[in-house]
Image (cartoon, rainbow, N blue to C red; front, side, top):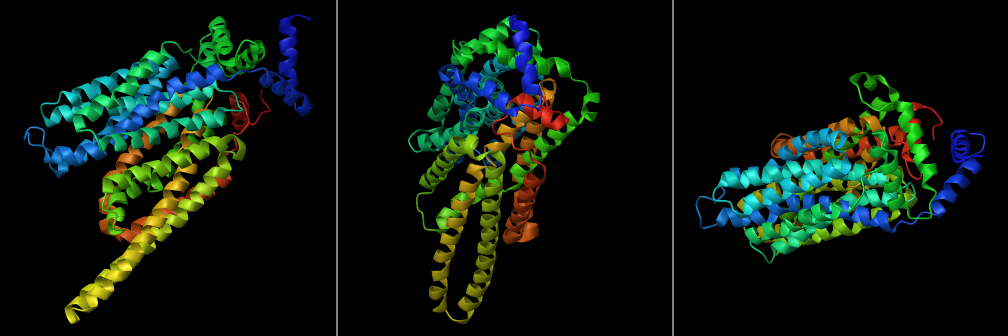
Length: 501
């Protein structure tokens, strides 16, 4: 029997439902020969992108206070300009998401990742050399554009390289590196001024460009382009010399042949395309509607009310909590599964945002009582100050639970699931729609947050977030499939309603 027949036999055994034990033993036999060292190396090189993206997100926090007090009037920011300096990144990132979707299909995952390091470096260079406020804005837009491309390309690159045993852990490293970047820039901001901070922020994207020169393109992209020999070389690099890569190559090739190579709008009628697209978009909407940006926005005030004098240090503590629990999520992702972690995360956030609502409600009641008492009897104001401290600790505890919950599930998992559920031919388009949704929602929630607070009161706004968290738990239970331990081809088959490879 020649190699072609042998491969066909393996694929038939895998496609049929008659012998699941046989299928598992084939898969296990293959994976037992796989060496992950080079796969980890390629993942490390690619996640320098999300780290750069974390540096961009975190940069405004230490830079804005300095730029509002700077001696040079050409660079000094007023409140409105400071708000735009912080939020204009999301506009660049939304455009970057669309650009990334086009780039990954045209030039591939690897080159897209290499090219996106350029606007990171150029953007930070413009900020370093800034002579006026518009140069600062331009630098932020460019780094935002690069962040949008990165948030699309890196999850795709990792999910297409990794095998099913480690895909969850490696995919979660994207969010881990984002929060590590945010914490890193908060920490560096304690010691460096805004220009030196921008110089530091340009180091990870420079390393990304250099490291990616030595990494392969993803085997799935190469096979979708009909480049079988290059795909085998990429697989041999990623799986080690002992793995019989022809087996995996044939399996991916079969899935590519079955669905055709190019995407047309008429494909949106196919349940194998529209079902995962709706799930991907809803995950991004729910991620932003949990209120993560609102909590981060309020973090400093909450720490001040709890009598934390060093609000800079408080930001570092928040960053550290995020890093620790995103790391925990990465370690348990392939054991616990995506669905369980999303449910636990949603419940934790629903409880903590409800508690936040209670905190703000009691604060408003207390405030009105205190004012009344102050008018009636001066001495009572001293007694009324006491509960403020207790309530501040309620807010602090709620924030701790919220950030822990978000980092365990709704932080990393929407990006991971986005990179797993789409068929190869729509991966660029569908991922672009998801990234655009995410950044647009981030911009809308951040910009309308103050209006919501005025309209619904602080308590009402946080109870709205709590109700969104409850809806996302129901959505998770009802519609999100478990992708743990499945190949990308098996996940595609689940949506198409076939047994699949």
